[in-house]
Length: 304
Image 1 (cartoon, rainbow, N blue to C red):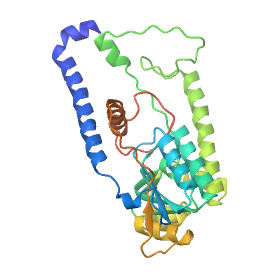
Image 2 (image 1 turned 180 degrees about the vertical axis):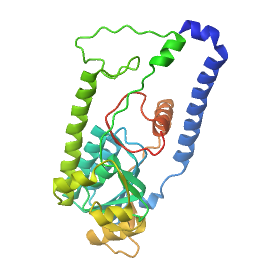
Image 3 (image 1 turned 180 degrees about the horizontal axis):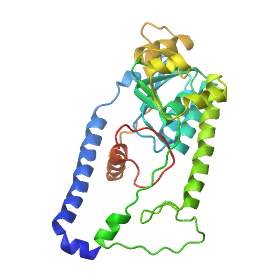
Image 4 (image 1 turned 45 degrees about the vertical axis):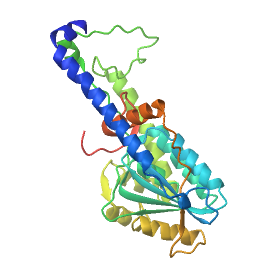
């Protein structure tokens, strides 16, 4: 690595400056977003009954915030129903399953309507399965039912820059997916078995949620993307409509006035700190480029 630094100081400097630039952009984004907040009359402190709104946007890497918001609105006596607004290509398996479980738990207490915007694919669709009703636009991209894991193979690059790694491991499969070499046949079979198992879990939960035979779901779950209109035809969603339609339905299910229902958002943390700035920068990089480590995913991305 030191030889690469000596031979290509300008290239190394560009890499560093690029990283700093992305962190700067993420910081600016955080400052702007902190200034744009929901009206005080629509937050969790309202005294008026209404429809709770939770937003699930971007790549799903962590579930903590969504789980916190679901619990908060579920326990609020003023929230009579909830709209889960989804605009996500999916993401980590564990996080997607946690959100699905919490949405399902919430729907047992009060009505939950899942509303898909531009995209509700893979893990985003998984999260919607816990709701009482799933609504999408005719052109919403959804489906992409499946599991994927990606390992970068940097062997050729490492050879060019003279990078080598020494590995001491407790078992032959401990460093499966190492980026300095291709997968062995044993490792590939191991990962395929893992993916097949998690894929079966996905299919099983869809079949239970949609009241459809697993055999039917397997026919639909080959990783393909469906439009909202196509998803309705095959039974993956309940109806077509936009965010307003979802709010109207949720208000009706919650016994509220459907003409102009109060919208109640979870409490938003607005404290500014260097730590939050760095965390926001990391999330921005993850949303754009994905995690910096291999991760088992319910995820669809049209461009790699």
